[in-house]
Length: 447
Ligand code: BGC
Ligand code: BGC
Image (cartoon, rainbow, N blue to C red; front, side, top):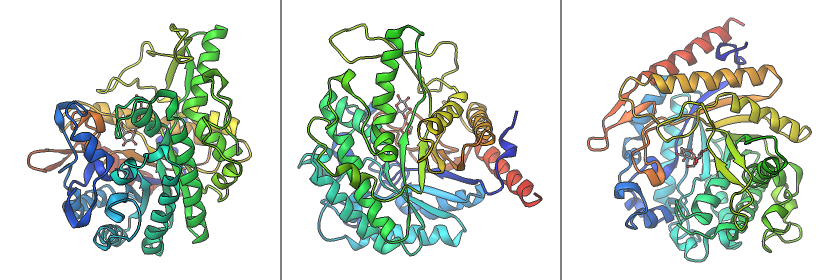
């Protein structure tokens, strides 16, 4: 079996973070409020009332965090840019102090030999745009294009590749369908237009970036879907879930059409959101890469409630679980990549794993995380030898950080962060990842 020591010589190593989860400094240098500031302030919304007001104080401590990245020997760093720092109300004039932060960050990364890989939207929509409907409002896509242009004009001379959106699926479902994340809307299937408006935003931004000669990616949360049995009812339910979670996003991007959602009683215009010409806008610029965030497979059975959604989520039996309760199935990563190739043989661009990792309750010694990362990288190496073009791996995450509705309870960091003192302590997984990168690099140099 191929394993992680056989990864291609030019394979790129990174870590991923997101602005609201690490930056803090929510009131500084003219930043406007985001939906996450509003949501986290709402009693009961986030576990134990945690917020991102301070988070990892990365806004001030970024030099220390870049030193930690340098210690790992990374090729790349995926972070996100906070739209409310750039345009405090989501529209109009750019806030120079907000843009200056990312300017400093990019220069500091480049000085260290680390390639910046920014994500333009990782869920922290300016609250002023949410007040006008957020991603339910088509105009948000146009606002996103304006914001993208402002950022690319400033950083595009030094940043070669860009990720437009992070996990439009999770943002739609957690943010707008179930209300577990900001903005806390519980619209169920009426949230579907947010998928289209996010994809439209991606398409408009992608054209602007492409026009400036920049590489464009999008990162989605993808999951291999297992049917609970081979019964026709379970298979149909699994197919419906797969359409909603995976194909709703990858089909328009890579095939130029939406999947069949009739199992949900929804037509191809997603409740009237899709207008003539929109799919051409979504695919107008080529995707130079597809970002895959992989955590776990999903197991699906036929619905027990005939009046509800056309599927039930069920537990995957007999597998280990992370502290979050998520099933650990490294083979699911390989399966997911093979499915993508089968599904999009002519249009699948090179893949980058833009997130993968696990939360644990371990202290400085975290063998569970090392095992999670090692087994997933082995599965990835196998998929690559089977012909899947995967260019890099960005683990989630560098630091313990604000894990959305779970506050600081789910800890995903290679580096432990003491929330009271902000003291950073690299875990054993940090040393393991550093050594893995060094070994891969040494081996590649002799090939
Ligand atoms: C899923 C993860 C996903 C997360 C979003 C979980 O239920 O298993 O893959 O990233 O929700 O917070
Ligand atoms: C998100 C991250 C999140 C991670 C773990 C993904 O859903 O992009 O922001 O922290 O998974 O839940």
